[in-house]
Amino acid sequence: MSTHAAIAAHANRAVPGYLVSALAMSPASGLGAVQPRNPADPLAGLGHAKVYERETTLFSEGDAAGSVFRVMSGMVRLYKMLPDGRRQIIGFLQAGDMMGLAFAAQYLYTAETVTATTIQRIPRLELDALMDAQPAFARKLLSATTSELMAAQDQMVLLGRKTAAEKVATFLLRLSDRKGGERTIDLPMGRSDIADHLGLTTETVSRTLTKLKSTRLIRILVGGKLDLLDRDALADLAGGF
Amino acid sequence: MSTHAAIAAHANRAVPGYLVSALAMSPASGLGAVQPRNPADPLAGLGHAKVYERETTLFSEGDAAGSVFRVMSGMVRLYKMLPDGRRQIIGFLQAGDMMGLAFAAQYLYTAETVTATTIQRIPRLELDALMDAQPAFARKLLSATTSELMAAQDQMVLLGRKTAAEKVATFLLRLSDRKGGERTIDLPMGRSDIADHLGLTTETVSRTLTKLKSTRLIRILVGGKLDLLDRDALADLAGGF
DNA sequence: CGGCTGATTGATGACCGTCAATGAAGGTGG
DNA sequence: CCACCTTCATTGACGGTCATCAATCAGCCG
Image (cartoon, rainbow over all chains, first blue to last red):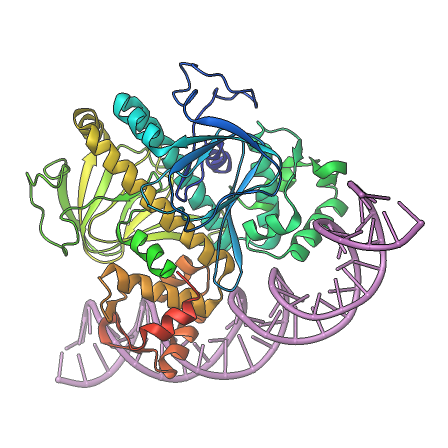
């Protein structure tokens, strides 16, 4: 229950940095094409969209921050690195998520595509103008940022207090919930991406998935897909959230 | 540099949940008394302030959320708990920090005073009215929330990728930076609070502090105070941020 | 079919958690 | 004012979880 409250919060999601926020393109709709002039999407028509191939850097930590971005389709990872190369992935962005929102002069994390991804790039000036013109839009941004913050808090609990098995189970359930509770989920990112998101190593992620497989909680499919065979057992394992 | 960029971000700080944000009472000023009708502080005069004694619960995760709070003096901890009692402290709030900001019906974490604390409680309705009346105020809230998000990201790096020694060193430096780089800092919270904030145990925190003491990087004073004897060495140890 | 990249599995060990005892500090009451 | 008690910090011994190092395996592409 509280588990699902937290997950629901996650549904309307975003990832901060220079900053991220989920802003409904079309609320609860799948990954549709851009619909310029959609009254429900104030951002439609701003900036311009572009397709990036997989494993492409969109911007790096420290770059001058001039634009905000919205993911239209595909997947992006955001991460920060320590001087010696250790990496923490802040979040994975999917359709509707925004990044680069913030009031800093530089991006505070690096953004890279995981898969081929369509991204709308919006100059900050245009976004500012929109906020001035539509006060309600600023509220929406605030709301989206707030949701992002909540997700970040859940991630802190995960990183600070959960075991490897709990981390992996939580991660899988989150992915599922993002897809409306689908039993079959996509894992387009590699094991090391998952590891760097959960504060683990690739080996531990792999071993944990193997154990979940052998206990019949999941099934690993071809093409980076995965079946959640027993959501209840996974939720127990996840230890809340 | 990037170290201080991150820390600077921290200076204008907040903690999310129902949500938190730092909103300058008087920017960069210490812990002054409330100054109603201060043009630089749109919140002054809203709601009313009250003094709470130490170790008092302000609200709990799941409570109906009707107000936002601003810390005027003292210290508050925000935390989330897993069903089995494991606790993750999201953040410590000091003068100027806000909590309870958000658009959820319930608070998403528990807030408790660490020390005796003066807190301004502002009904959400009043806050909403202020946002309607002053569009610039909504922007300020967004900015504060964004800063909070950045701090949350730094905390993810700490929790997911830093060693015990790096965690403690980072924590001490953050406290110092919050005080403008003071060499002597306050540690009003207990070891277990620190542990639950850093994803460690009280024993490990204690051992790590002892080691820092014996290597002359810090000195532990009476009354929960602490001297940073070698900031540079601590910054190296902290491993960035 | 060979070579590359990433996933899996294995062996080992370190870091930090757990369990436990001691020590210090503060608060209360005699 | 001191004695007692409670609470918290410190220190020690030990063990487990997960990281590290390393080898094999599977998939993919040319």
